[in-house]
Length: 297
Length: 206
Image (cartoon, rainbow over all chains, first blue to last red; front, side, top):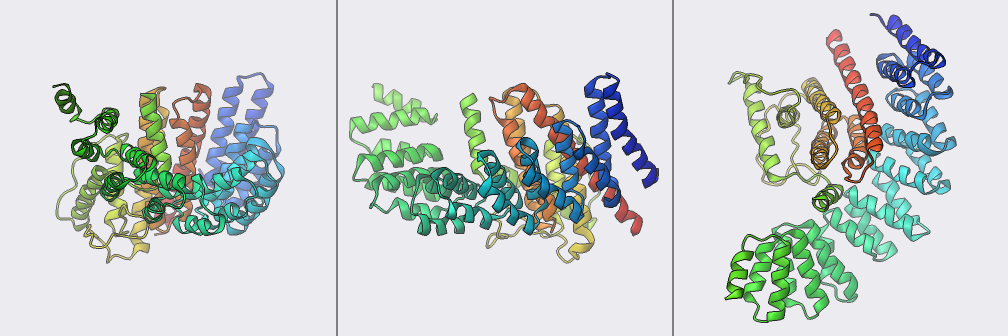
C-alpha cells in the first residue's frame, strides 16, 4: 500500500471512529480504532501526519486518545510538532499538560527544555513534578540543579535534590552542599547517586552528630566491601550510642551480616550482644542458629 | 512479602545503572557468543529460544549492542573501568556502518519482549518482580542507546521507566494498572512500527 492510500485509511479510521460513537456503538471499539489509526500515523511523512494529529488534539476525543496523539507528535521531526507540544505544556491543564511536558522531555530540544523552566515557576505541584520528570528523561542535570539552587521552599528543594540523586548527578549535588548547606535529603541523594567519597567525609565529620549519623547510615545504601569495612570500623571506634547505632543500621541496610557476626563474637557486653543478635535475626543470617544455640547453653 | 517488594522497588528507584554480577556475567557470555558469530568461526546456534524469553532477549540484544564495539560496561557511565578486558569484537568496523542496524534489531527484540510481557502481566507479587526485571533490561538498553549515539531512543526508553515503576507498585488499583499497561502498549507499538519503518527505508536505499 502506498503512503497516500495508508493515509486515507488512517484518516478514515480517525473519522469513522467518531461516527461509530455517534451511532451508539461500543465506545471502546471506536476508541480502539482511533488508537490504531493514530499508531499507524508514525509511518506517515510529517507533513501528512501533523494535520491529522492536530485534528485529533483539537477534537473531542478522550484524554487517553489525545495523550497518545501527543506521543505521536513527540516522534515527528518537525518544528510544528514541537510548537504544539509547547503550547499544550503552557496552555493545557491536568493530564494533557503533564503528558505534553513528558513529551518535551522525550524530544530533548534545548529551547523547549529551557521553556519548561519558565513553566515550572508558574506551575502547581503536579506541573513541577512533571517538569522534573521531563528533565530526568532528557538527562538535563543542570536544569534540575538550577531548580534546586533557586528553590524558595523546602519541598521544591528536596524534590529536585531527590531527582538529582536518581540522575546520578554527583557534581551537582556536591555543588549544592556548598551553596545550600547540608540537609537530610542531600545526604540521601549522595547515597542514591553512589557518592561514597562525600558520604565518608560526612561520616567522619563530628561537627553535627545527627548529620554524621545519617551519613553513616546512608553509606549502607551504597553498600559494597569498602563500605562494609568502614562501617565495622566506625562501629568499633564509636564514642556515642548514636554513632554506634547508625553504623549498625548501615550494616543492616548493606546486608553485611558477616560484619555484624564479627562484632557479636568480639563483644563481651551482654546488652550489646543482645542487640547484635537481634540484628542478625532481622538480617536472616545463616549463622544465627548457631549463635542462638551457644547463647542458650 | 509486600515489604520485601517495596524494598525492591525502592532499591530500583535508588539504583542508577548498577547491574547484578550474574547479569554482567550473562552479558559477557553473550558477548563471547556474538564475537564468535561475528568472526564466523562457529555456526549460529539453533533458535531454541522463544521470542518472549526475557533472558535470551537480553543476552542476544546485549551481544548485538556490545559485541560490535560500543565498549559498554556496567560502570558509572564514564566508559570501561580501568583494566577491564571485555571483548571488543568489531571495534575496527566503522560504527556508522554496522552499529545502528544491529542495535536497532536488538532494541526491536527488547521492545517486542517488553510488549508481550506487559500484555501478560497479572496482579500480585509476580507482576512486581516481572516489572522490575523489565526496568532492569530497559535501563541496559537505555545506556546502550546512549552509547550507540541514539539519544532520542535513550530518552524514549528513559520515559518508560517512571510508568514501569508505577506499574510495579504493590498498591496500585487494577484500573490504574490497566491504564498504564495500555499506555505502554501503545508507545511500545509506535516505537516498534517506527523502527521497522526506518529499517525498511534503510534497506531500500542500500
